[in-house]
Image (cartoon, rainbow, N blue to C red; front, side, top):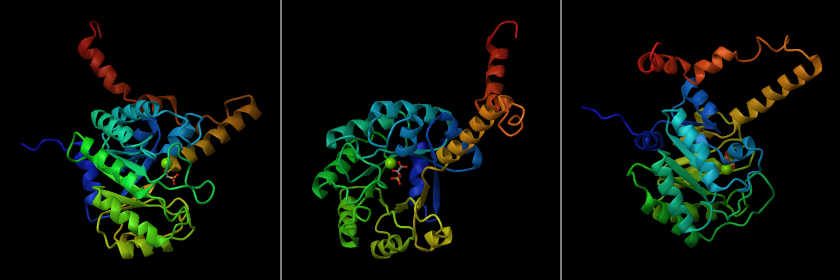
Amino acid sequence: ADRPKTVFAALREEIFSPTLSFLMEAHNGLSAKIVEEAGFRGIWASGLTNSASLGLRDSNEASWTQVLDVLEYMADATTLPILVDGDTGYGNFNNVRRLVRKLCERRIAGVCIEDKLFPKTNSFIGEAQPLADIEEFCGRIKAGKDSQTDDDFVLVARIEALISGRGMEEALRRAEAYHAAGADAVLIHSKKSTANEIFDFTERWANRSPVVIVPTMYYATSTDLFRQAGISTVIWANHLLRSSITAMRETAKQIFEDQSLREVEGRVASVRDIFAIVGNAELEAAERRYLPGK
Ligand code: SPV
Ligand code: MG
């Protein structure tokens, strides 16, 4: 009999399949459910939006175990595989080892670590952020891969060389080193408004390993061009948090001004909708089964 696919195998399939895959950002159990409801096949647990949803900056202000707690709610809330933004791995090789073991225990299907230093700063802040030494970062990758307790766990190595202004040769040198160290895929990041440097990279990298991208800044580039470039996976990195900020602001402003709910009722999700999303129907069925007199 076919055994159900694990979340680890599901993420590995998204990353290694020849068709373009999409991971949608989520930052808690509810947003994870909404990603699944929309039809996506995988989730990006963003560091930026997870931090922001806690009211914190994307600077490792939340501890890694606080992030892990959020991830546990997300994994419980969805059947989809989750690729977590593991920032720099929260330290050196030893921190990465413990992180990967704990992610595997909680059925988090993969981690992305970036070649910077702890505490990290968001890639879109400032210029020329310091990068990790290549050999030291390769140690983090090897340690992570050696620590996974499921064979299908995915480790993505994120290259910040283009963002930090080190150029294409440095980006390719790092991609090669991270691939050789055992990374399953590389994430090439860019903060340009066009995807030219991404396509230069993919052409020269020639799919020696799958390539993951985050087109937050080059959002106007057609998805068909990503497909043609042979990219494995696109991450829509922060758009559920951003849309919720817009919606929450509008609602808060309206209720504040009106001192009444009349205008907003009908424009916001109903209370019944909340019950449906979190699965109250299942609880009612369980009560009929387990609670006397129901
Ligand atoms: C995140 O979503 O936290 C990311 C992507 O790491 S970025 O904000 O583009 O660095
Ligand atoms: Mg991040």
